[in-house]
Image (cartoon, rainbow, N blue to C red; front, top):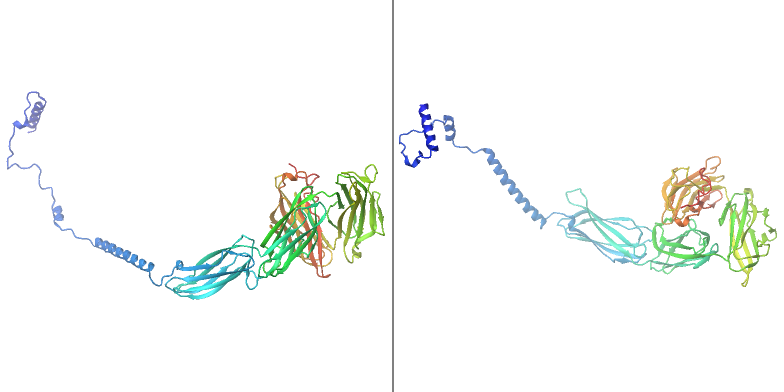
Length: 636
């Protein structure tokens, strides 16, 4: 059978590839017998499969649960949308802070020192009540009570209770705002409340800005346009009150330029030599402050004085008041005097020298003719006065003569040729020495006053008289000194020695106090930072040392100063750190680090105030072991 089938295949192959023996299949057709059976058997289906196909598919319970859950979720979502829409567009008992409103009616501008009236309305636009409602106000700096302008306002709070649905509460606010013209003050209002069924507290805030339109006071400064270096001159500050309200606890603060020293002021200062308490000003009232002082500097220098009018912080007459009403400044031109006079005491050139009791004071007086004319018959005199001066110790040099009847030391000045005249630019110096009385002999004033006068006749001009005054104060029982350090001290300092222009060098400033006898209370040291000097904010030893940027003043609040300090006990010291960045204009000079250094305290046993001062502290570091000559002069 297999051979037969192979033979057929071979024949078919020959026919297929034969060029002549191929016959079309259409030429050989035959029909299939009806009884011909298929070659594939029909028994491939098993009985198990036939049984499975015969059984009807049953529905599962899981498909039904998911369908029900989907329908429930859809209905819940639709219901949530409907409820939210109802509540939002008119539902009851729903409270929103958006429906609580604070409106303020008042002027946008208000004069300083006058009563500002504001109408504040709190509206409840909810459909439910606000419970336990409180209304609070936060006031800006400089706010005062309309009933008592000396009372500062910072924060107030009032109970409103229940604010019903759709109701409003109106509050009238009266306040006095104090500030400079153009300053914007912000008053903050707030309502806090609770709702029924909740312990949570809700808030609604509102801010209202008011611009200070005008100042209640005016300030007029009177001073000469120019003065000769070293000449004493008067500065008058006139303060006028223009408001209809009483202005309480008015303060005046002055900021002096470098080289200026105060000799006297009327009225007396509250603190240092630059803060005055002027009391209350009624409508139309005026106040006047007169300051006498001297300004030292180079020819054609311009120096600026600044003055600030303000009010005390509450009832406390703090010299560092921050509420400013008005500020003004005035610039003065320095000119060389016709004849310049200067004096040094123990090599210190200061208007007021502090000397120890019973100590010798070597004094040198220098003069120079700055005129274009020759000065004929020049004479120099020094008049002494004061009970603290020991006349028996007087010694006069350089050909001078002391007259015990007139208490004057006199010199007939001559030029280098021995002629009694001074040519333009001629200068010279004379010297003398004296001592103060010992401590046990000082019963009253501890001052020694020197009036230095030079007279002469300029060629072609009227006779000339030039005067300078100096004061020597004999130190009390308090030993007070100040100095600067760089290589040693309580702080680690940086920068170069000598200081370089436009480069920063830091220094440690030290104030030292000793007390030999009575206990002192309310002791305080104040000083002003010099030009190009910056406060670094460092303090040492737990002492209360602060810096006020507006007045450029350092204050050491010493408090109590017990007797025996510096003798049976160590000196008490306060230290702080500063940075000097000299400008190129200071090259070749010795910069001042701090000046105007003064000590004040109250002697409880003697029932009197004690005041002392020390010379300005410069970059000459006499107590620094690493300091050498020249390290104090600014270099490039």
